Length: 256
Image (cartoon, rainbow, N blue to C red):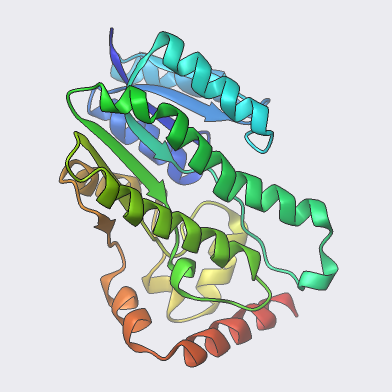
């Protein structure tokens, strides 16, 4: 059987960048995205451009059973040697202004989907000669931020989960990596917000460039893929209270 890489949130942004980069390397892909977002056409483009196999799977990963069904379908039909848990949801708002479904949706997409999918596909990865897991966290994983609140907590979970799983699988054939990028130039809103500040212009990544760097370090089996080293250093050395206050003021200013 041919080996495949599975990418969630693959129709746009960083997920799309991962799909293109792996296709350039002649790696077959299974791409997951919400329905009605043009995933079938994107897979067709990858096939024609790079002469690889690319399979579309459209589903809503906030639904628990859909995650189970996806994993079952893959395990029954494919050999997976790369799993990229990229799908996620962000947002800024006062916690009292959001409804419970907003919170539930973020937790299910950012935490549950990645964790359950990893658990369900791990036996598949373990039976390959070499397996790789890449979990997309965020610099927010190390920065509690008021008026974001839920999002940084979900990314802290993903970072911790990745590091713990990497240690557990240390003596196996599966390598686990986590990347914690800052802003990515994926839509007009992010572009406007990062260009407002002097600092943001220097840490924002183009999705294709970030994907290439991540894949390069993934195959080198890096546990933590650092793509913003200077910012990562500042986050390590600054006091937690200072970081939290500074980032909260920035987000509050954007909300106003």
